[in-house]
Amino acid sequence: MQPYELSVADAAEAIRARRLSPVELVDSVLDRIERVEPHLHAYVAVTAEQARRSARAAEREAADGSFRGPLHGIPMGLKDLIDVAGTATTASSRVRSGHRAEADSTVAARLAAAGAVLVGKTHTHEFAYGLITPQTHNARDQGRVAGGSSGGSAVAVAAGAAGFTLGTDTGGSIRVPAALNGVVGLKPTYGLVPRHGVTALSWSLDHVGPLTRTVEDAALVLPALAGHDPRDPASLVTYPADQRPPRGTDLTGVRVGVPRNYYFDQVTTDVETAVRRAIDRLEDLGARLVEVEIPMTRYIRATQWGLMVPEATAYHERTLRTVPDRYTEDVRLLLEAGELLPAGDYLRAQRARTMMRQAWTGLFDEVDVIAAPTVSTVAVPAGQDTITWPDGTVESVSDAYVRLSAPANLTGVPSLSVPVGHDPAGLPIGMQLLGPPLGESELLRVGHAYEQSEPARALAPVA
Image (cartoon, rainbow, N blue to C red):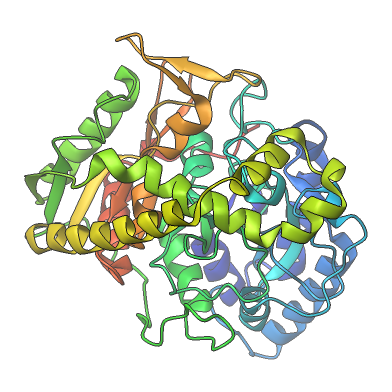
């Protein structure tokens, strides 16, 4: 096994035991990037020289016995919305041409303090406003979409071109590409991870979180990110200190909610089969399955768009008027549409979101986690715009991808996407676990138990 193939947990153990040096690990990942990047296009920029300097510093610290923790010397990629001082933050857009960050974002500073090594900035759908990331190719099939908006982050992890990455999630932008590329994606509780220094799409829906090869790795990255930052008005004061999951697979006593509506209403047969099989596996591990009714489902899509569209337009108000031609057409049209949305509709969306949060709080009186598909279908071929369901319903690809992930953004609850198999063509399928606010530890416990009991479900880095 090559160093780039190691999980964060295994690499950290090898570095601590002096069986692997940070320099060897970072060099292996940089070599891997050089091999796969020409056909995957996961990265906007690769910071090779900076990474090698940081790896040498991490190696010196390790030799002196100054081990910073499980992220010491681990190569990471950051979505190109996340500021790193002196490095461009382009948001994969011509609008940001020539921009360089003056200071580190909170998450970049915290990861650097934990010893992680930046190897590059990963592609996003322009300003995170889309579910495709068109410049990046799916890690399992280059003719298919990577998912978005954190497509570059997911593909880098799936390809072994980073130990872990960070993405952002406004309607599913961590979990959707995680599911489509066969990796783990965690959207934490709203406010758990500060967003200071992260380019906004929609301030009331945006989250920052990790994409990793395993659930255990996500649990190792999260504590380095979480914690109050007064520069983010939504930042929570309280947060769980240690999210590392237990190594056992016993889920006795865990109540797993299985939706009787919404989440399985319009999904492909392959997705439903794989996710229901995974839910049955949770029951085999001791969990008790409980049917639940998802509340207010008829308002989910309208509320999501009613919040996101005007908030995004407000953020881009100046550049939309001064340099509109620098935006890609799909993003520009969405931003212009936001100027036409009445203030009353935005306020009604805010009220609907409040009601949804209250209703979802009641759901978690009945269950500890909810298990459902992450995405309704696998990665579609590049260029495909719509999906036609068996009943004749035609849905845009973006709507099909965001439909099952948006509720967690609207309610602010944490959601974890875990690979649970693939379709006959080998395309990955994900199951998402949703929990109550600050319920990350239970999500990670359940996801880790499933992962440990089904090792064959975890996909190795692509060739």
